[in-house]
Structure formats: structure tokens, C-alpha cells
Image: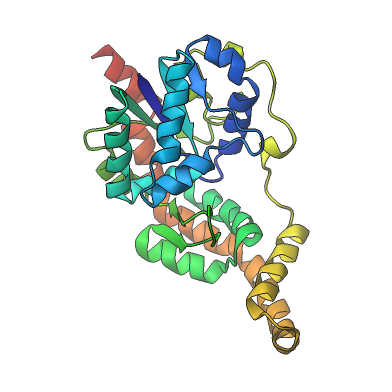
Length: 294
């Protein structure tokens, strides 16, 4: 069996791809390619999140389902798997688990985005899920080339951590050692970002039912970003008295936070733009063609 690991990345239209595959799951299964059907949100977070902390059982169950369906290929898709680029032990655990279950070939797919636009898109998304301060994000990304967030969704069955990659070339190069890595450009978006993974699997004509609604996961508008920003900080404050004490300071900080993100994003883009372009040159579609011809 062949395994296709679609690691996202975050905010690169991963949900669009997942929704397409989920809606057309029966059609692609007829081609021998298994996408675990999801009744709600179309990503495989329910298998990815446990894997990130060493629990392989849901992932193993997916492989068993693919085998039971008589499929020769399985797609495992979750943008939370972006963390595998930075967690070598978990990437190795996935490989060992897959091999033990009869997987003989693994392809790793990642869609990357111009770093400044990536930064600017991640900020509103994080405001929805957790507290996101633009200045803190900027400092971390500029120092390390990566943003790490522990426990963005605490609790049972929740997301244990998130990694967001900005300095693509060194991190992807290290991850690619001994692996078949295919990197897609978010800007290559006709008919949709990441479409070349679908084309590589021979499934473009199987995507009859189109992604729609929540499956598009568009960026939140500024008013909703502000709403969620306040909500996250209100939760952190806890009691009413504390919130009353800090509310005006939060409002001022929130206004500055939202206003300065485009400035930080521009600086991030200038710092890591060349790394993005080089990563595409090394791991992008032209390289796949040369690899296939060799």
C-alpha cells in the first residue's frame, strides 16, 4: 500500500482539498484511493492529533479501513501534521507504524505560501482559536523561522501543539532526508491550491462535487477577528472584576495589534522570501518531473 501524507500547511487551502476529497470519497475509492470519510469537519485531525503525542491507534484504524475497502493508496490529511517537520520522533513513528501495517511507499506533500502572506493569514485564524499577539508572533518568527504554540486547544482529544514554518528551505531540507517530499506553491491556485497532488493521483476528474461553505475556510473579516480576540482575552481574565479592570487596556492593545500585523508581515516576507523561492526550486513540481525522468 502507498501512503500519501498531506501535511497542509496551515492557511494554504488545506480545508478546500480535504472537503473536495471528503465529498467525493466514494468516487476516489472506486479508483483504489482511500480518503477516510469524515461526517463533520473534513480533515483527519482525529487521527493526527493523537499521533502528535504518540498514540497511533486512530491512524492504524484508518489503514485498516483502507485495506478493508480494497484500496492500494491511502491519503492522510491534516494541517496539524505541519508539526511533523519539526518533530522527528513523531515523523519516524508514523513511518514505523505505517510499515508495520504493510505500507511500502510514503509520499509527503506540503503546500507553502509566501511568508509575509502566510503570517498575515495565520494571525486572524489564531485569534479565532487562541490568543494571538502580532508582536509576539513577529519576534518568534524573525528569531527562529518558526512559530510554536503549545496547547492551542487544551483538554481531552484536543490539538496538542501547532508549528508554523516560515524559513522553508532549511527545515524542509532537513525533513526531506531519506523521504519523498513534494512541495506545492499556494500561488499555483488554478483550479485550487494543492491541485497538483490531486492530479498526481489521477483524481482531477473525480472531484465532481465541489467544496463549499465551511469547506472553503476563508480568512475571517476584521470585525470577527476583533470579536474573537476579545473573547479569548475575556476567557483568560476569568472573573468579571478582572475583566472590568483590563477591558480598556485590551481594547487599546487589540487596535494596535490588528493595525500592525501588515507591517510585521512585510518584514517577515522580506526576511524569508528567498527561502520560500529556493524551497520551491528544490522540492517543487519541476523537481518532481526531473525525478520521474531519472
